[in-house]
Image 1 (cartoon, one colour):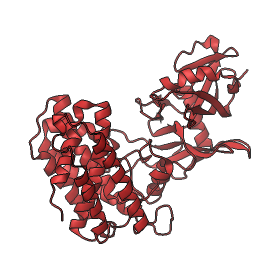
Image 2 (cartoon, rainbow, N blue to C red):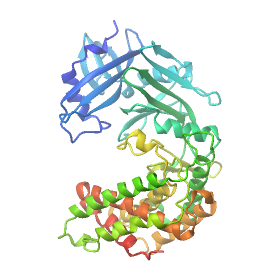
Image 3 (spheres, rainbow, N blue to C red):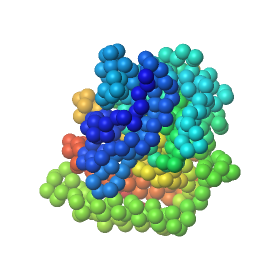
Image 4 (cartoon, one colour):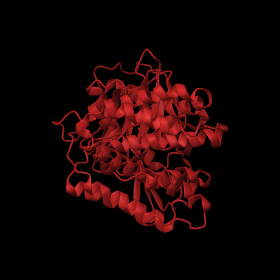
Length: 466
């Protein structure tokens, strides 16, 4: 007899949940865990599958909602992977650890299954121009992920299940659907998705996209070629600049879609951006250790950094704001074979720690450019720290010039500030914002990496003011 997941012990879940890689609050004390809703997807004596919504509550009164696809088998079957507990003679476990259980989700996508009723339901969707999963799909797990879980279906599709849920459509679905519908070739095309709707919330649960075979992770590619052929890497980075510019051009191309229509930044929007970055700068410099020689070049220079920020008010046009990637770095790219698109851009979810409202906010496309330029700086340092490779002193600047030069040659000028000096100013401020965030993170988590963002902040503060 299939399991009723509401019989799960919430105390057991409270012990199990923080041990999961994708649980986003490991450093916080967990007060309670509740099963908010459960919808059965498949029922069978040998294997059943349900989608559960789990609430994690914290002592301060805040809470997060997680998706937990649950499978169960008879305890006699001996299943022992990602087990939550045994209930009513059945072993209950994370369904995405089981290819046979995950295949049920794939078939639901193929069949556009809808389960539930008007009070709560899970709906599976598939687009017309992409081949669906096979009737008997083959499923394999992908490598470990920080905040979500993915499986490969039939070596042709990737299904990503979002773990932490927020109300509203996930930006990953929204962005990939927009780009897919407009034929942008440098992404993994959208195949389908599944979503939850009910009194609890309406939320995207997962997205299926084409699998990109043979792609090389952009971060690993750069580290490898810094050791073997750093000069040959420069034209590849220039090509990436073209791809990113074309992506931004598409994202800013539809004035009829309110979610994507490019906007002139209002005084209020610029004031909000300035205030947000200003607060980050102030917090960093107030807390900055004064006895760390690696920080000597920037200690006491918080007011200089804030003066730079105020230059936005005098730029005379900051360019239009559009939807953008939002968490762009080399690790969000794939270099693919020469007979296909040169680069593929991945993971449009945005920074998972930010709210969906914040991730959907339109910003200058230069924010993505700043992320990539900072990623290049990290790659140069990682080559030395992790692989013992000494990179020529001028290589990072030439890599920046290659990427940025081809980006600016390709981008729609209306998306950029009105002048070249304005573009340089805004890009420098967005790099400063990124480096400030990086330095706070490294001080708390990776002290050996502190010199990387510290050097960036010092460089940005020394750049001449246009």
